[in-house]
Amino acid sequence: MIHVQSLTKTFRVAQRQAGLGQAVKALFSREYTTIQALTEVSFSIEEGEMVGYIGPNGAGKSTTIKIMCGILTPDSGTCTIQGRVPWRERKEHVGTIGVVFGQRSQLWWDVPVIESFNLLRDIYSVEKRSYQRNLEELVELLDLGELLKTPTRSLSLGQRMRCELAASLLHEPRILFLDEPTIGLDAVSKIAVRQFMRRLNRERGTTVILTTHDMQDIEALAERIILIGRGRILLDGSLSELKRRSSALKTMTIEYRGDAPALIPGMSVIDSREGFLVLELDPTKCSASHAITRLSEQVELVDVSISGVSAEEMVAKLYQEYRI
Amino acid sequence: MRKYYALFRLRFIHSLQYRAAAAAGVVTQFAWGFMEILAFLAFYKANPSNFPMEFSHVVAYIWIQQTFLAVFMVWFYENEIFEAISSGAIAYTLVRPIDLYNRWFAQSVANRVAKALLRSVPILLVAFLVPPPLRLSLPNSGTQLLLFIISFVLGLGVVIAYTMIVYVTTFYTLSPVGVRIIAAMLADFLAGAIIPLPFFPMGVRNAAELLPFAAMQNMPLRIYSGNIAGVEAIKGIGLQIFWLLVLVTLGRLILRRALGKVVVQGG
Figure 1 (cartoon, rainbow over the protein chains, first blue to last red):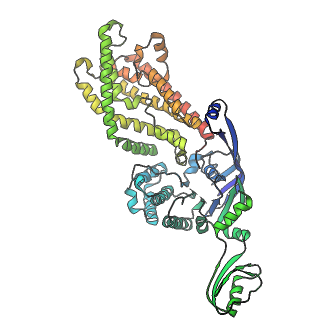
Figure 2 (cartoon, chains in turn brown, yellow; figure 1 turned 90 degrees about the horizontal axis):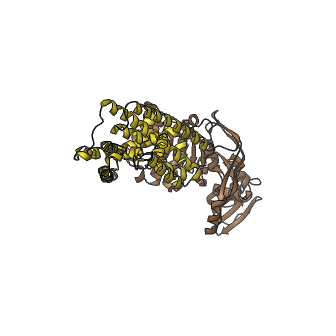
Figure 3 (cartoon, one colour; figure 1 turned 90 degrees about the vertical axis):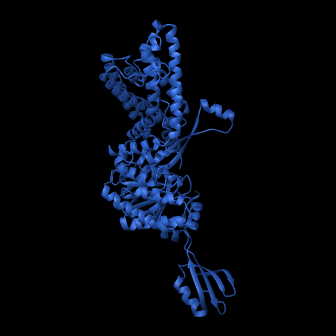
């Protein structure tokens, strides 16, 4: 569905030192530095996938998204989405995708949300009947009800983001690009947005490509992540696979009654108190179920919890590993 | 076509909301028109034989100009377009299946027509009611009125096609204030917004009348007043069509080039 091959993009940025003298100098001769935004970026995404596209600020995430939306033209490389080259057949291409830029608004500021929706209906030439059906569904799923009559400027950020999502889906796109959709949202709004995305992907089979800095988004949504740093793709794989690769160790916390249990190979103690033990498990030597069985033979277990590394920790580790 | 109409409609409704701005505009334009006509009257009384336009033509020229200021003045730019380009909000405009040039054109037409509509009625009413030397009269004939309407629509098109080129330069300069001001001053002067073209020295006048700026307000206002009539008017309309086509083609070309290497600002 989406094939990206060796995309490369550079930007020229004018630079000058601070100060009046430098500003005057810049009037006559400008110094430019070339920024390599993308270097040989390649990946493919199949229909119905949900992909998290992550990387630190300035890594090239937005640039890639903009190229895939037909807004930017790359220096070299190819990209075909549903058989079209986005920047060459922009009008045809953008009719079949939906886009949410979390930091901007696509709703007209001074008019009620529904006016914006109706205008989008006309811009995308959506048929009246399917628009009505689709709108009703989105209103229900995103709980928009009263919001439709409110001017955009009076909406809270969370309310607005729900409207933005609906706005980008009125024409039932096959692919949805989300550039930081949960930026600045509170916990409740974030969860609402995530739930909605999951349903959309499951029920309509919409392909979703998501950039975010919020690792909970990734954990909740993406089956696959692509990590980009300094314009290059560094990793591409499923989240659990990456977790396994970045750290196999698990943390096991137990509360027990009785004498302290003896350890078995693959376990090491991180913290221990009377009736309370935090262990590090190496699953290659000792599986979690094996560990529980052996421990419960020795003591009465009151409470057990096992956790892997969180996505947050994993990504921090990855960034360090790749020095990005 | 439906999408452009929808854009037109939303923008039109939106512009109609600014009633206070319109009221202020009416007062300014009425006062301005009144004083300008009085100034011309003083010159005319001093030496009528040296006056290049009939006085009644000047009166009609100025009243219609003030009435439709929002239609013809180049400096009525769409700030939203400048902002969209320099802030990067254009990203959302570009992900719509719509031609960018047409979209901005439709938006500009809506805005100018809506603004003019709000202001025109009270100014016309006063202009038709003031005492005779200052009074605005209708064109001499139905034909002249029809020619005026055609020329009016074309003039609006030329003005917008010209501003479109100014908008597109924002892709290259990002801070378009300089270009904006120079482009507006130059155009408004050569379009006869400050004084009608017949008052220019002969050589300058002859040259100016062939420029695209003469296809803006100059032509419809002089046709309305009767200063240009018959075959001359039809020739003038031909020149307007010519400049409209040239400017639209040029604007589209530059826009396409700009979009090829566009930088969408911000993350």
